[in-house]
Length: 492
Image 1: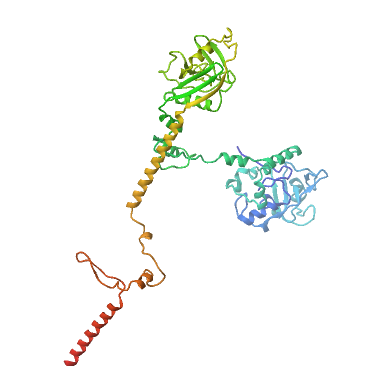
Image 2: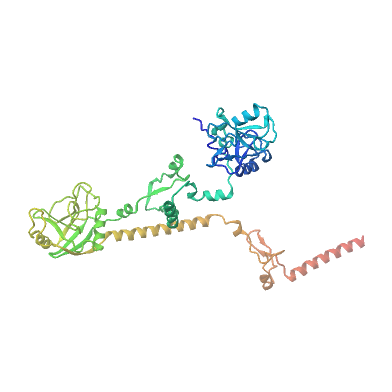
């Protein structure tokens, strides 16, 4: 499919396809606007349509005529220019006419004078701006600047394009006011920056390190949306999973009701999530003031939900914990994975004290239709005696502290074995220049360091500083040697 542009009432020019203000054309009849073609020629020096060399001095200024309605027309025949008009211009004057006028009054009469200024011209000076029988000239896909995606933007236009409203062609007053209010209170960039933070990597240690990797290496290899990773790292196990491995004891809680106290033993070592949830709710006074809203004699009593509707989360199930015996404690549910904050089906503890209070609660008469007790059975408050999760947290903290100390000790041992750096092996410098490694303060205090000290075997240590007595001895030996040489010389 080809995209064509037409004259469209002489309002479009070929470079930016926008209405012109100062029309110009090339000797080939390609229409441009002065404000667009001059920056292009200064930057590229070519014709943006053909790609051939172009100079600004070769451009021809066009003079279009308008009728009383403001439409471009032929100043001789007064015919309005349309997409189907054959339009020409005279190179010498730049006046624009319809081809019919030039053909009838100039070509056929062989009178080559401008129809407005009476200025002479030649047949070659007639330039065709638009010929409806030749559409190849208007094929946008063949334009050189379109094929090569070349553009010339002035600094003001580049700055204006940064504003999103630049791309809004026309808006009414109400829309403009709405956009102005939006830009005044808009904080989208700040919100986006806050949500685009890189997630922090979980710190992996001896306790929470998994036997499998994070998978980032393979993920970055197969996906361009992930930053490249070249090092395999062990994935970290969820903190709750690590904690529950250290929970080995039972939990103990006392419920104070208006019928007496119930002592509960919680199976924290078997169903740690459910028991931790129950203990935390007790500590936060969640059950304080709640009522047992359902009671069936010789079967169960249900309570612990502030609303009495029984809404909550997924439960844990252990097959070895069943409703066997009196005083079994469990979570209520209305079906699989529908446990709530109430006390019914999923077993997580049992009553170990206060059966008299349990019997008193059971003896309260209930409504046969709703099973709701006719007199209120209320939980006043709860007391937690043993919380094995706090002990597990303390044990984990001690284990991590111990592992950290061992790691520091191993690191210190490795540093002790490694060779020292060159900076550490360099001797101490006492001053600049020659003798910078000599400590003059020690030289002044030690005057007998010139002695030769004998060591084990054949090793000797010579001091680099000689005493005055040693120097005098050397001088005497040299003088004696020269005296012997002179004596032998004169005697011979």
